[in-house]
Amino acid sequence: MLDDTLTLALDTIRKQKQAIVFTPSRASAEKTAEDISQQTKLFLPNLAQQSLKSVSAPTKQCRRLSNCLKKGIAFHHAGLTSNQKQLIEQEFRNGTIKIICATPTLAMGLSLPAYRVIIKSLKRYSGRWGMDWIPVLEYHQMAGRAGRPEYEKMGEAITLAASESQKHEIHEKYLCGLPEDIYSKLAVEPVLRTYLLSLIATNITNTKQDILEFFSQTFWAHQFRDMNKLQSIIDKMLLLLEEWEFIKIQGDPLQNNSGFTPAINFNKDQNINNRTLIKATLIGQRISQLYLDPYTAHHIIENLKKSTDSKVELTPFSFLQTICNTLEISPLLRVKIKEHEHIQEKLVQRYQQLLESEPALYDSDYDDFINSIKTSLFFEEWIDEKDEDYLMEHYGIRPGEIHTKLATADWLLYSMIELTKLLQFQPILKELNKLRIRVKHGVKEELLPLLKLKGIGRKRARKLHQNKIKTLKELHQASTQTLSQLLGQKLAQDIKLQLENPDQPIQPSKRIGQLSIQKFK
Image (cartoon, rainbow, N blue to C red; front, side, top):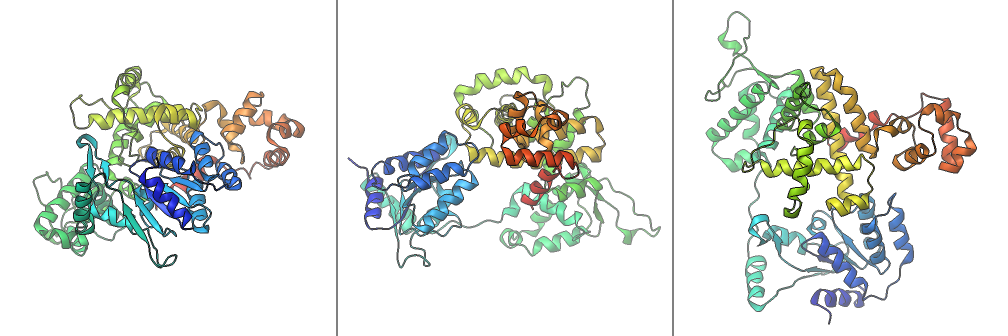
């Protein structure tokens, strides 16, 4: 007997329409798509093949998606690569794909030709408190995907209820209820810290009065209303930025006839005069240019200082754990209850490699710390050349999530390198540069010489290394015929041209940095 979701999905196909099925989790999206695909008579082998070609190395998840696409059904969530998501969205617009089973991420900002939206559940897992109702706003976003005016004259949004009482509750809460209030994100400390430093570093504001005038015009101030409280929050942030040496708070020149502007050391209970000059330090300016949360920058700088300690056994794990214990890399890979003992064992083996101390077990920071260890181990396995299927099996991280984590890690490592230069910690600069290229390509250190050439990545470099071509010199000495057998004729010729014209190869470390900074602008 078919359940209600399958019945509605198949009915949509019979009407020659399309539908989006919203599910509460990625696993549910994949399972629902598979169940529907087993009931359809569609057959689209070309689309299935196209999906496999959209990734360089198809994984178990890719093959699962391909089998669904063969029957005109797809699943869509953050675990897919950007190429896969673009393919699904485009083919849905073309009418080739009939049903997409998705997590709520598809509800934001996309206009798709869905006649019908089917919402399997309006409850989500909310951590320690179990299942809870989703916000009314989120329901409106999902329901709003049905009947987009550029595609349909009308649409249906169907929510499934487990019982008559739940049906009544859903009707009252979501159909008759009001959406939640929207709150300014400036009230969140990481956002406020970042914007405040940016305003000072770009000379948009030079005094506290300028800062207060700027923020008084924001939605945050309009919503907050209490300007005295807002001023105390900004004072706290300014003093924190000064303590970290990202800004200099100087004396009021109107109260000083000598022309000299002395620095003022405020304690945390003092207020800053409205006409006090505030300037970003050199390192504060660079942090702003890197789009880093100042707290993250302070965390990285403190760990970099500890890297000079002779008691620390400096390894790639030391730097990986530093970037993994930041807000920017979140969400971290969560340590499950059954994994705690294993992760603890790994941590004990690496105690001497840590640049920060382990918090006490009952500290509020402990969960984030232990999750950062698991995330660091994932990166460590990635640069040890473990493939995506292995990482999915051992860490539960999907290909799309891997690519997102790698892009963020590249940005953070680039930022760490820039801060290392400013701090003049030259001994570790070379190691950080090597680590950054290894993370980008997912390779062991022995393959780094081969990655200097355009067209050589993880698999090709390993293939060359296994065939005893380990350096650029050995690559130069190898015949075009040998390289053609290993890499293909066209790439072999390209490599020979690059070796003959050494000014042409693209250095990965430079190119990656440019891409990363552009991504986060």
